[in-house]
Image 1: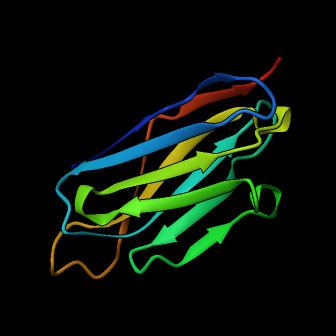
Image 2: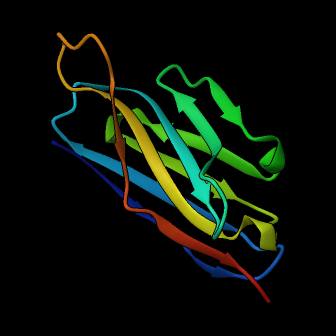
Length: 122
């Protein structure tokens, strides 16, 4: 089994910063990509940022210039640095990992974390 544990959420004032972490553990051979999604009340879950094992990046237009994503492959951990936060960034943030569980795996399996709340409010 594979577990993803997120941390770093909380309450922050507009213009502030937070850093989210997501650590993957368990039966992991390698991780193809790690991504951050968010879901605000009454809205669909949306992709915020993603990073592949080769460090190719993908950022949503709404967060470009404010958020950065990075990854520590040795620790199977992905980070989301969020700066210049806005009230519209308020959401539950979820981590997702695409995991190869063995050297013989053909397809990567998707695993999700439990989510961490980010609230931007004065």
